[in-house]
Length: 166
Image (cartoon, rainbow, N blue to C red):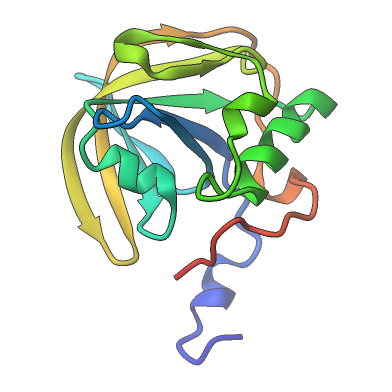
């Protein structure tokens, strides 16, 4: 346990996991990563917060991006493969999008063919949040897909992160 007791505080939490994608406006290159720090922040108007680690390439692409796509993954094998691809590989070394099926969405943001639920959101605000930056999103496009149980932190296969946590 860490010295301040926070590991014990969050022990047992089971966060939903998402794949967040964007496109680097300077290069047109897609970027994406597995994300566990997200939350709905408002009902009316609907707002959603996605937190990206400063360590990864997706964050660097999102710094100048105007939209992010948030993909809900399920617990099926193909969904676990997407989670492993976007959670254990780094875009600094691997072209993740060459390894999965996707199509361009609004403003060119990559939409993963394997994810049946997604939301493309316009970035309204960026908020410094420790070692992560929060991106406040307003929905532009929503695909509700299926209501199957989402992939959660506890249901993830053992993954070695593409980047460290801090």
